[in-house]
Every structure is written in structure tokens, then in C-alpha cells.
Length: 183
Image (tube, rainbow, N blue to C red; front, side, top):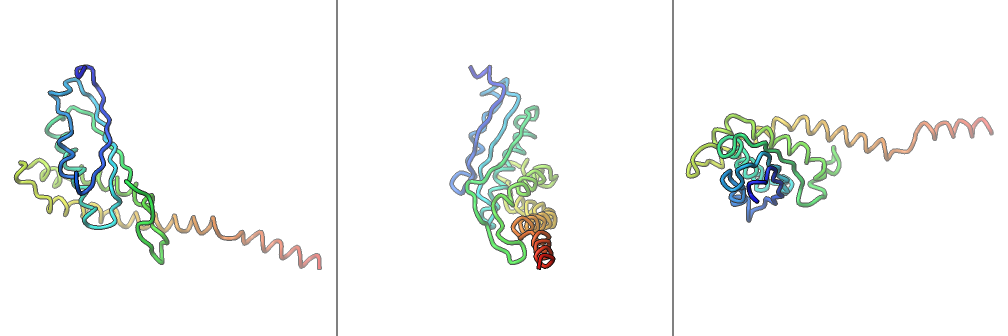
């Protein structure tokens, strides 16, 4: 039956306990010789701290190796979701920043990391020479490149929420004008 499998989808939950080991579950060509497409649904913790941010390195590393070394002719794609939803932090200028506010930008950062030449070079090193600290430096550089756009998006979202919840000023002024005319 393994010869008939052309597409493989699987969900991976990346956390402290499994972030190093999850790549060993990736099926190699000899197990599924006619595999054409792999879709990874990655469930990760929101990047609320430096320790959790490292999960992105452990997601990107095996995917780069898979695309570049083990299965270069495979169509590999991934999408992300967080393992929980909620408020990540509060800001007096931006309001409550939720996991939903961070997800799209986090995925863009990971895609940039996977395309980064320095990260690719680090990922392709021999297993014993893997430098997680250097990979984390690349991740942080890519994340910083997205900060300004993300904060601008958060500001736009906050303004939109304020407009939605603000009372209709034009309607109340018209109502006051009509009351004054009636008096």
C-alpha cells in the first residue's frame, strides 16, 4: 500500500518535550517511494517568551533539510495554528494583543527563516555541528524585520476596534440638532 501514497498530511504539536524529536517522524523516500506532496499542520505555542520562540527553529530546521537534502523533489507546504488562544500581553497603546494578532506574522517570520541563506547553511550542517544558537540569531533577525509592519498592523486593528465600539457621533449630534429645532 505504501507505493500508492502520493500525498501525506500530518499534524505536529511542537513543545518542549518533542520539539527536538518530531523530525524523526518524517517518512523518507524509501518508506513512501511515490510521495509527491507533504503538508505539515504545525501547532505551536504562541511566541510569548524567548524559550517558546525557539519552537520556530525546531519547526523550520527539519523542513529545510527535507526540502534541500532528503526529498528535494517533494512539494512541501505548512500552515500554523497555536496550541491555545488568548491574550499574549497587554499594551497601553495597542490594547490586548491576542494570539490571533500574532499568528499571520509568526508564520511569515518562519517562512523568511526557511528562505534565509544563513539559516539554510546552518540547517544543512552535519547533525553534530547543528548550531541552535546561530539559528536562533537568524530567527531573531527575521523577526525584527517584521516588527515594524506587525506593530503598524496592530495599531490599525486597534483603531478599527475603537471605531466599531465608539458611539455613532454623527447620529447623536443630528439627534441633538433635531431636539433643539423642535424646542
